[in-house]
Image 1 (spheres, rainbow, N blue to C red):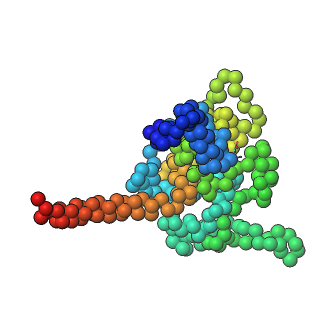
Image 2 (cartoon, rainbow, N blue to C red; image 1 turned 90 degrees about the horizontal axis):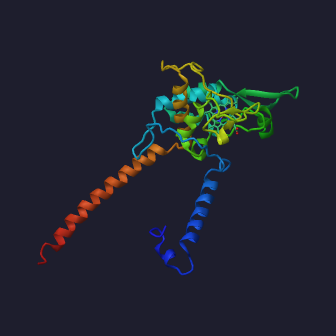
Length: 272
Ligand code: HEC
């Protein structure tokens, strides 16, 4: 702290303790803002780290995994979770052709007002339609899930404390015996990576739960890796672009450094 804010620490009347309290307050409010709705969501169990292609300053998305992850989202997660910030057209960014996007959109139905008899009508989705929540309202979503609302997944990886690693651990963390004395109420499941070890989401992934067109074996672990990669891609669509820009900026600065150095030598070469 003192090293970071030397001028603050030097101010009379500001004890290190007061500084620490202020810093903790800042961090807490930061966490609360960044993780709206999940401010309390920290599990006691440490999350096993996983190696992802997209982490690190040069990380890139494995687009085959992103595409498989969409299959998992579409066949499993979308039964309860929407991704309303995304349109079907956005899925083109996974490396799909316009025709593939059109076919994916067309396979989904969206509300289209009412028909001549006044009944709610539906039509096939187009590239401009959003990936809707399956529930008509948040209240209906909660009622269908034992009072817990499935969060929208458009930016979930970004706001979820623990990010991709913890999401993967949560998806694969079901089926363990709860510690002695833990009450698991009806409609809840024990999961060491959930808040207080309890979650209202039933275990969503099972070996062979989906079929992959590229022949990858759809084990639960493979599906978890793929769907988390897809959700990370959806939350950070410009990640690769930012990494590329970062590399270009650093190369540019290095070239500038060499040129500046040569210029300095030249200017000072006559001065003895
Ligand atoms: C049967 C409905 C259902 C399905 C299918 C489902 N979920 Fe959920 N999910 C929920 C509910 C309900 C919650 C809220 C749980 C809570 O607050 O206890 C939730 C919460 C979550 C959370 C946040 C957990 C937390 O700590 O609050 C994540 C991450 C998540 N789901 C991921 C997924 C993924 C990925 C899939 C697809 C592989 C999926 N879910 C499929 C119902 C579902």
